[in-house]
Each structure stands twice: as structure tokens, then as C-alpha cells.
Length: 594
Image 1 (cartoon, rainbow, N blue to C red):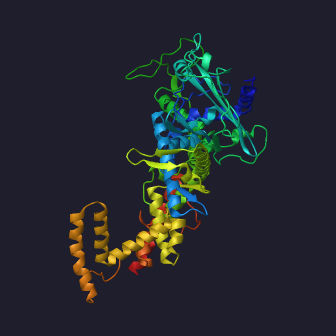
Image 2: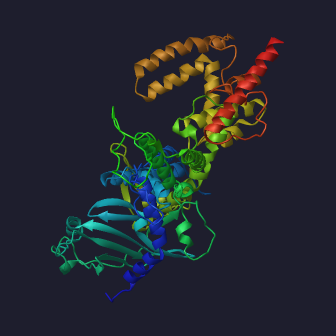
Image 3: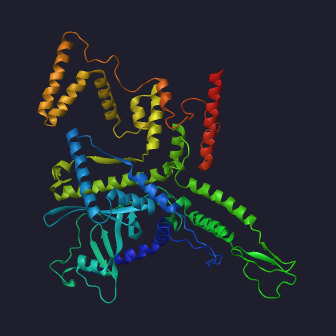
């Protein structure tokens, strides 16, 4: 093929993105707890300091990943002309194809596509994946490959991605295995640039175009490459988290777009290590710190011996003596700064409740207020994750239908076959995510019960407060349970059908023998098997009052709310909440005594 300037496009774009890449490199140092080293104002290493590297950044990132991995994902397939059966088929198709993709990720060292995308959005601030539905011999391969956005260059216009190119370093053995190229000399490996635009796919090994065939050691295994891919678009999906400055257009603003979770505390975490190093160094100096020596004639005579040591005796003149150099002001200033620093770090990270750091229970409203601070961290990234899956799903559909595939997908033993005609429908997909925690679930249930007690419709509570994936389905299940709780015959009937479906015919006949006498008695006018009152959720305000506190004597179930209506931050917030609860409790006891 004619000489291409595509590689130069990649090199130029890498220069444009250098500030963004530097920010990602700095964030990586925080994530891996790169050892801290205190330095002077002139950048030189500070002598005689015990350097401490605190684990705040790693704990924060790991906790954030755990919360996002525990988020609920809801896939919605919609279309005007879709019936329920067709929608279910399409939902199963995506479920099975993403299962196969996750298996490929597991084989490639990563946990899953979902976990890979989450780590990228949190640690890098952006994520990228390539989508190819292809065949390897007779095998269908749903090839969705994630790339580290730190090593990805691209260019967009109003229609989408013009071109994209991951550039990854591979060892000499990997290059030989994947491309049949033997690197010369002492090279340990080479950078592989995989360029895609809407027409061609070009691979460069150490900036040399890879053509295959006679260029390789094994032309049969690595034949001549066909550069035109025929997709009509660059098969990448790239998305940034919503955190950062999205609308600013300053030169170099790319550094502050698609921020990682470290953004609020990026400048503070080194100061935390600095303060911890000062504390430990001062503590160590208390055993053997700097001294002032009083002498009749300073600068004369021999240098005194080190006075520190157990049972050590030092001879001094009558007017001579040692005294510690005063550093109390330094200690006090350090403590004040440390308190300010911890408060600022708390505001930029997760609340104590997410680390299990509270020493007393809170009310439902207090839990909701404390955990709401997570929204600033997770909502922009969950929205980006939803867009990522939606865009990938569109590419999967497009390539599967154009390829005319009909393959079995899914877990072994549960495979399902999907003709391309079943997927070639006019439909869209929507993905919704929301992070959950046991504390927030309990708080939502409490607030939801209190809302229903004053007449808020159950569908509204289940949708907006408790946030069930299928609120209408949950209401139907609750109705069925309530009916069964009030009618033993319904319970027997449902159990009998479950036994029939499970192939337990003998048990089903035994259940039928229990059911028939009840039905005969009902036909004669009896109420046998009917409960005096059907079960279900309590709807009274008293029931709500029993449930709202849940984790302690909170103020949400009755009593005066906090005067300022807010929850303070950090440990001070915990103490304020406890004092409020104790005051309300004493007021109630006094009122009862009267």
C-alpha cells in the first residue's frame, strides 16, 4: 500500500495529550503508594527525616472499586414494535454475549469487562474498548478488548471518533508469538501501535508498518494483511467520567477533563505523607533531639560527648548544662495543620460510614445525608459506564447483524442460539446503574415505609426511594405474598405447581390431597384455610416509627430535627449527631415522667 501518514497522526496526538498522560502517571503513583520522600524547598532530599507513606489513596481507590463493582446494573431493551418475547430474546443475547466477553477477559488476566472499565474510570478518569465481532476459523469470537486509556490516542469530530490507536509495549517473545517478527539486537520488546480509522487498520511494530507474509518468520501463520476492515467506522468506544471541567476551552484544559477519583485530594495527599513524616520524626527526636549546651566560652574546648544513653554520666562545669531546643510551636502548628488536612481529605473522599469508622448508630436520615456525599464520586462515573455499555451494545448489534451470524452463546450447559434475524430489529438499549450499600438500603427502607404511611403511592416509593430494578414486578410479588399469607389454599396450589415443574410428581399428588379437602369445604361455604387478616407490610404510622430509627435512636422517627438541618463533616459530625440524639432521648424521658 502507499505510504501512510497515520503513524505521524498518532505521534502528534500523543504530544497534544502529554499533560493528560502526566496527570495519569501522577495518579498511578498515588494508587500504588509510591514511597514518599521529603524534600527541601530547593528540591533536595531532606536529611535525617523518617519518611512515611500513608495508605489513604490505595484504601480510597480499593473501597471505591468495591462500591462500584457492587452497583446494580439494569439493562432495558425498548422498541415500539417489540413484543415481550422479542425483548426477552434480545436481553438474553446481550447477557450471553457479555458473559463470553467476560470469559475472554478472565483468560487474559483481568477479572471482567465490567471490573476493567470501573478501574479505568476511577483510576484514570476515562476508559476505552474495541468491539469486533469476528471469526477465528470456525469459531465465533465476540472480541471486546479493553485498553488502558493512558496508552490510547484518538481524534474526534461531530460524527464521532475519526481514528483511534492504542499503543502498548510487548516483550520480544510476545512480538514473535503474535506477529512472527524477531526483534534484533538487545531489544527487550517494542511498542505496538494499532491504528484504526473508518477505512483501514494499520499495525506498527517499533514504528515500522507490519504487512505480514514475507515480512515474518512464518508466512503461513502470519499471511499478508488486508488493511481495509469494511466496518465503516473506527471500532472503539471511548468515554470520560463526568468529573472535571467539561466545557472549558483553554489551551491544555484536557489535563483537567475526565478526572480520576484522586482529583479533589491530589494536591493534599503528599501533604498527608509530609505531616506523618514530621510527626514520626518529632517523636523519634524526643528520644535524641537537638540540644543547646551552656558554656563559659562557647566554641572553645573539646566537643562534648553525646549525652544520650542509659545510665550515662557526663561531666560538666558548674555553669554548664544541656537544654532541649524548644519546638512546642512547631508541634502545635503541625497538629493544627493536620486537623485541617484530615477534614479536607474527608470532604474529597468517602464518609466514615463507608469505612465502618462510626462508633455509634445513626438514624435513617443521618445515614442518607452522610452517604449522599458519595454521589459526587460515583454518579458521573456510573453515567459514563452506562454510555459505554450502550455504545458497545450498538456496535455488537451492527456487526452481528451485518455478519449474518447464527451462533450459540452463553454459559456451558445453558447455551442459546441466536440467528441474526432475531437481533435485526428496530430497538434501543438503556443501562442504568446505582451504587448500593447495606446502610443505605436500610435507610431507604425506613424512609420508604414512613412515606407510605402518609399516603405516598407504593410505585413511587419503590421507584424513587428504594430504587428497585423492577418496581412494578416487586409490587406484584408483594401482592402475591399477601394473598398467600391470607389463604392457605393459594400456598398449597403454588407449591404443587413448583413440584410439578421440578418433576416431583409424588410430592405434587400429596400436596393435591391436602388441597382438595379445603376446596370442597370452601364450596360448602366454609372459610377453612383463610387467615383472619391478610399479611403484608404494616401501613400505620406506629409501624413506621418502629422502623425509621433501625440503627439507633435517630431523630427521624419523631422529635426535633437538628437546628441547622445539616450533618457536619468527619468525626465532628459524628459527635454532633450523638449529642443531638442524647438530648432528644432525655427530653422524651422527662416528658414521660411528667
